[in-house]
Length: 204
Image (cartoon, rainbow, N blue to C red; front, side, top):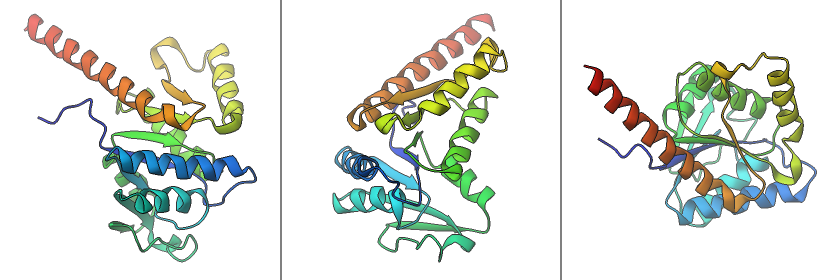
């Protein structure tokens, strides 16, 4: 059996535009370099523009591996990046998101718009419903995700996020903290799963 707590592929959700803050592109490029140097395959939306293009090109420029997953109708609009080692073209957005989920050990949200938010929130929803225990992290570059963190805190205080429906969202202000946090979470989850399995075995 594969070692559960090993992170080999990370899905990154991010904008198909560069955003107004130059630190967003810098963060995407820095994260791409870190992935390549640590032998982490990037799974992403397949585009060649904006933050999407910045992270994918950075992974490739530093000798890393990239899987792009893009729906057919977006191939032209988001300029599918032809340099990637693997490009999967899906019939629709649902299939794209399902494959991005299945092929990834962890999820990171860089700054982006409603598409990025939607993908991030879907992973949080699936986690909350017990469909997966893969780490989910927001890269809070220059406080970009603070309004979302405030909204989640607000949902908690209004008891829409209850103790038994906890959302486990990791956060990193600095790019270099992202991978260590994902790995630490995965190792913790793996230990928890082992303990759970042992407990079940004891009761049999």
